[in-house]
Length: 88
Image 1 (cartoon, helix red, strand yellow):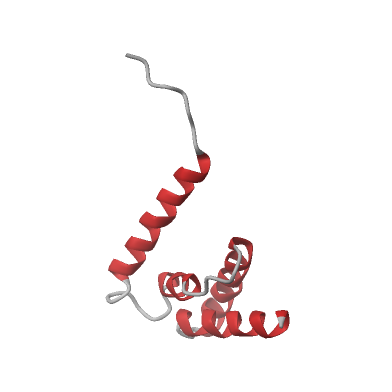
Image 2 (cartoon, rainbow, N blue to C red; image 1 turned 30 degrees about the vertical axis):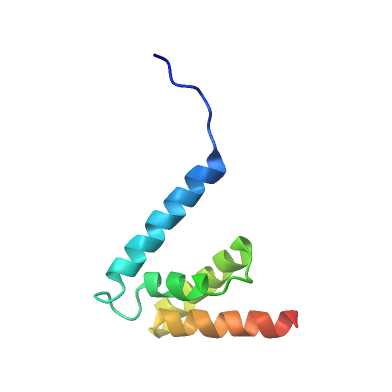
């Protein structure tokens, strides 16, 4: 029997994203505040952001966390708030 050669990149991306989110949720309680998984979870709570905006917020968050050592979820939330203010 030969499998059909149907490839759905969007479905695969969604599966990987869901698995990554589940891993972040499992590790959130045991990882330090500066762990970027906390930032990813905080960013995901904002449904009004596009994927591109989420990526940019995560990049900025990572830079600030690495430089200053602030908790990643707090930094991400503040950046998202600023993004939302600018767009209003």
